Length: 115
Length: 110
Image (cartoon, rainbow over all chains, first blue to last red; front, side, top):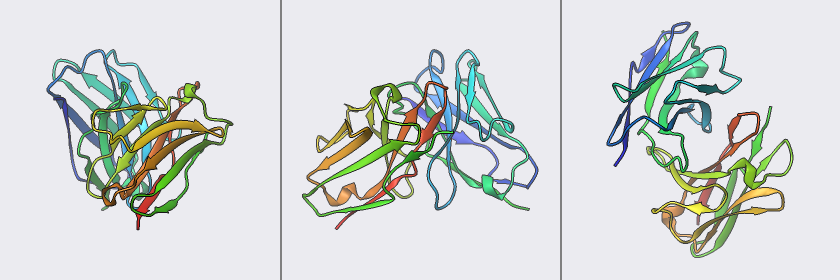
């Protein structure tokens, strides 16, 4: 059974960079797409982007200038960096396996942007 | 920039039938948008119910079905149960590479 687990700082200061890692267990990260999704408090889900195991990426245009995703197949992990964060980036961040049928999700981690 | 629209809230009686829809600001939704439906309950990660318009996952209850209806993607719940009370999100993929969630429908079983 594939399992995903997000990790990273839960509190980030405004203007800093949010960094999260998703560790994949129970299966290989290779030959799949992997994505990040977030949900701000009281709002809906927002797709941030995906990364293929080869490193090819596709980002949400509204976040593209601030987002970088990377993948480390040797560690079975992929990562998200979101720079210049503001309070509007406060959200529960989920990682998920993006390849159809998108059935594997992490439990999510709440990241708060505050000084 | 595509906007995906869903009913903000719907109410269904226990045992009743309800249809949630998912529309696109760019025009009709087709199978080429590979519509997905996710169920999200408070404190839990989203759970995929339907993929590629009408395909179910092993855990998808038989009372849920996906389809295309009137130019929109649709999720029909037949025989609603209290446990179905949740938020439901659709997801559409566009030829441009853009992937967009709908705003979500809060379903109340009452």
